[in-house]
Amino acid sequence: MAETISERKRSHLELCQAEEVEYTGKTTLFEEVDLIHDA
Image (cartoon, rainbow, N blue to C red; front, side):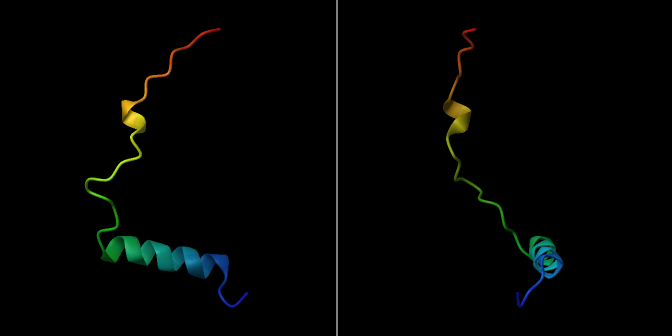
């Protein structure tokens, strides 16, 4: 591998510190799902 896991992790953490990386309005809609327990 040209890039090790630790290098990729470090790169990811640097990106998260330097830029806004979260969606502000996009969701998976799981907050709209209610699961009913039936055991």
